[in-house]
Length: 118
Image (cartoon, rainbow, N blue to C red; front, side, top):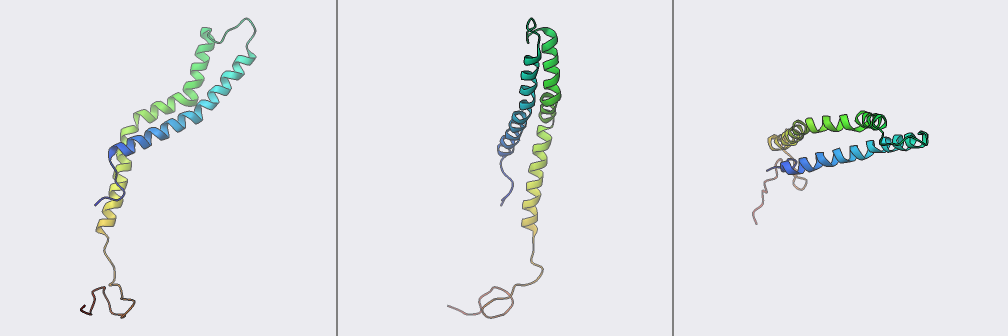
């Protein structure tokens, strides 16, 4: 009986959701940089000039892209870690044993076995 361990699809969706959230947070810095560059450009320059495009791509890779590539490379390993962690939690619960016999709160005798017959 598993309580914590879920299907692999659950962990894949969770990991992908975390990746998307991370990318959305990171893209904010890129968009701010893009606006700043566009405002500071001379009138005769364009944002799609090769030098500007290279600079924007470099900034993107530094702020968001490289981390997303790392997340992609480590996806399966991280999902396996999560699944192993949850499997170990379930095994710990399954293997748990009482260290002492509980006492009945009604008759004060050890154990939960009813001494009276109905």
